[in-house]
Image (cartoon, rainbow, N blue to C red):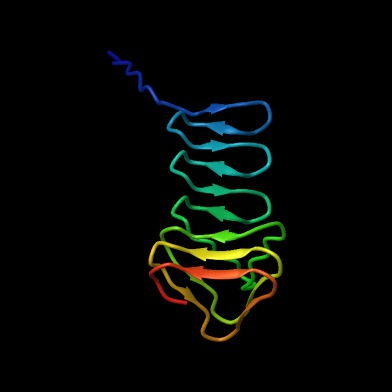
Length: 119
């Protein structure tokens, strides 16, 4: 006498384009990006937005050509490059610190304003 058993496996769904949808909020699409629904976005140019207000630029510069760098609650940290704002305003009203140990904060034609923090 033989006893037949059936083992159920919960396999992911495989689509024709090769993407895998495992129904646990990870989406792997055809351009290779992963959106895991927790605020991290890793796109094709390699940038990461972790939704905590940090800007980390590996070349050490922030170029915002049309206005101001407005940081209401954290720190702008620039280790060894230049922070350049030719026509706008660098504004820090929330007691944060603009910190630049090895480079220069260069500002021409506007205002550097800090209400109760440190520059």
